[in-house]
Image (cartoon, rainbow, N blue to C red; front, side):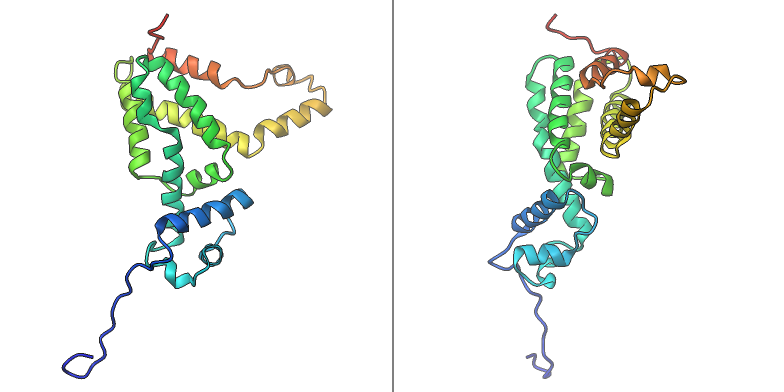
Length: 208
């Protein structure tokens, strides 16, 4: 109580039994179970942690902030700065494509990345690495970055939304004589697509 008789409200500090990492692990566990952020609320995350909803606000201002930080953490799975030690930019980008494919296969990844722009340390490290790897190409590093990220993200989203599987189901049940290229199309090859993009960017393999 203050000298004028008024009760002073103290802001609660961090709790000893939870922290940001524990909250993110709880959100990640729910995401792994459901595969999509839709329908996962602050209340359900709080229940997973074992605390009241208000306790989460000590660490995150909103549910959106939790998803943002979890998405940036997910991008850390790519370990992009390691790629700078490969010694061949062409090979490094192909390795990134493989790592990104593995990351995209983790349940909920695309849902996280589609929710909002991810502007954190891991996303910046990824962008910085891609622009460094493509700085000696035939187009600007910024454009090379957008081309690579846009291609991979866009194709991953199309796959996740069923464009590929839906088309394959139709091909299996109908002859599609009016669409012969669709009827006889090969399976998508991410490496072949990446190689074509790298040729367009002007990055040849330095190990050949």
